Image (cartoon, rainbow, N blue to C red):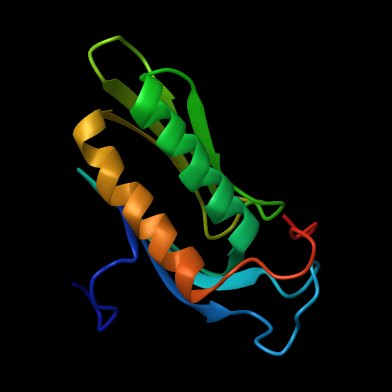
Length: 151
């Protein structure tokens, strides 16, 4: 826990994500209604990068959860968390038959002048908690409209 944010909603190795709510709580359409206000922080040896704002959407979180579930079941493939916003992107890739994973995290508070990339080795034991975190986010902030074309 840091700076009063509490425990993160989603934790993937060095990446923590807190979801604060819908960007537009009264919007029920697929365009504006699915954007989430988040804080994401990546902390590794010698570096801490944090971003905040409406940079993820419910459709992206739901897709990430489904793709992570598939990796957990088959030990193959990749899962991507991202959006049209450039501040945060995560790609988790299965890299072996023994449940080994690699997570590539791109995070920046200022995409025109900065680029930060973290690559982390993980194993499948991390996936269940990440999937559960994504499921909890979607339970609190369901996908609105016809599937969220704003994703």
